[in-house]
Image 1 (spheres, rainbow, N blue to C red):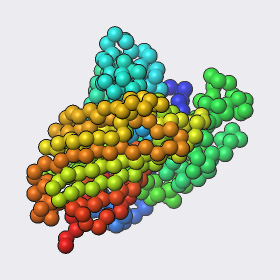
Image 2: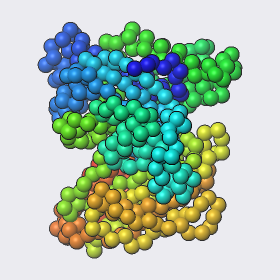
Image 3: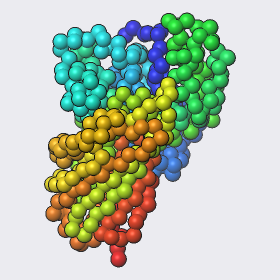
Image 4: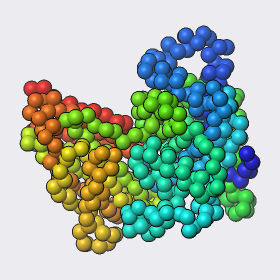
Length: 462
């Protein structure tokens, strides 16, 4: 496979993935046998992450490292400051080949280049929300993570890549990583100075974007060569890990596991057995199938032409259920930004997935477009064997907007409310920050919680 010297802005996420692969691969190949016995290292990891996580890792990681046989993966770079259903807008992608825990070949490209080369007559029509609210008639590769179920989007993206590129060589899986994962890695590596520019961990992604898109002239670079700056940053990051490996590898491994837990890293394997193991540990971004009588919901936002405004959006949810099974879900969005080069008014087409058998009653807060007082519609459908309610809304900078849904829960959930065996399962969308929850069941005391990953809540016993 041909290596490309031209590096795009969000290749920094690929850098971090490569560093993580290097750390994990080095653990399997060098750390375990050379620093101490494998049993001792495994015990330490079990104490840090739990036995189930370590056992799953021992099954999954060798596959994604190509330790049993060479592997080929599609890697998605998701910018979660521009949120999309599986975590963020796919601005860049990579194709990597792995063999025995080493990257043997890699190719990185902006998705706009892939889409531009495609035979436009063969690109299918976009789903209605993309056509109606984003004015995007064609369903290109860059928008194909529209399905919030990551396995479904992964399959679609592989299919769309083959269609647009003409490259039909099969993949062994898909890996998605979010920009927030990069920020956490940089907090371990520390500040980096490249070409006289200091990049600080807390503002790394923003600074890098500025330097590539606007700051190149001040560095003396041309527009054509402006992205070579990322190559210089990349070399420094690799050197820092190489020179401090024994100190950094435990921290990097912890960040990688945390990324899997909060869905800033998502995995899909074409091997059915490996994929079952990935999903068993909730590393695959699957839309859950709720058990009989279980309540639950998944909120999925999609930034439509709002620049990188998700970086300043705050979300909170209040959810209540009455004894007769009537549920009210209130989602409050606050735009803490202003009009600038990265942020603007927030435009989102959002969806809420509800339990099977739920009857949607009413909704408030949907809009038709920005600066339009007309009331928008709530669209009720069915996906993944669950009812789904979709709606569009806008939040101006400095403003707050609330969406309210009311619905009747199915009889099986109402029975569990009566028996006080009720359980609520809330899934977190990949790419979203921690979200405050206020929960009240059957008029009991309010439960305050912070949603950082998928979570379950039970009715308190009297």
